[in-house]
Image (cartoon, rainbow, N blue to C red; front, side, top):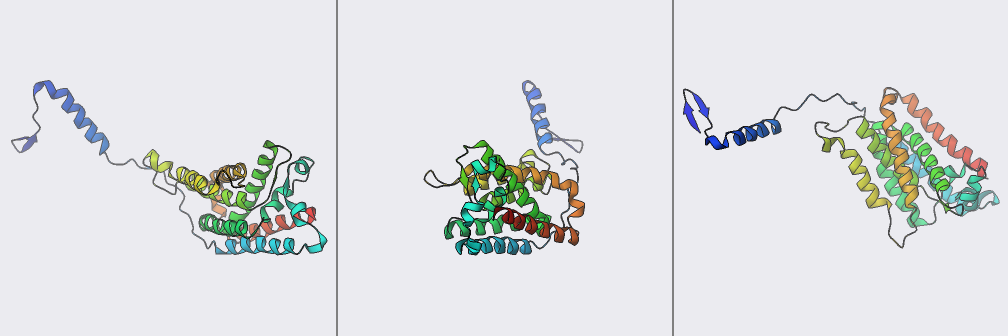
Length: 261
């Protein structure tokens, strides 16, 4: 480097001129000012705790009623996913099965992860809208998973809904551009994070009785729902929309159990 009339010059042997130009071009390309990114949604953060309370209350109530064989009915047999019966039109089982559990560890695990992922989604989409979408996504996922498996397939548990909530967060965060979008790695951040959590918490072990297909289907259905939600985000902050969505969620669960019993 030499100074010449107030300028700083980079001097190289003549044989290296083209290589020097290329390296300077690389430097300028890597350090150029970031492009103006398109504006994403500015979320209105809400209190997601009401949704969590409702979720825990519903599955707890069903656990108590099922344990007591309320109305002299076998709630497990009436509400679980059954490949044969679902194929014969008992589609409500895709909803009722989400509220049943095989024991305290199964119940506790779904309460914990459901509260975590549900709170994440509820913060950006509101408690009522979140759980309505989660319920519908998980019900569709149960149907898809059942139709793809052998008719002897049977399943229960809220884990399909738990991973639908995770997929909802990932899909919405990605599509709504809640993270920096300057580089492709940042753009894919929500998707990679969601898949990593799915792999870490939703695949079980070789000896466990984990319904991995239902977890994957729940995540995919929730993710697809999340990618659509930015189009309707203008309605999300409305408290009436949240309230009516919450009531609709409870109504669907109640109606499904009425059909089952």
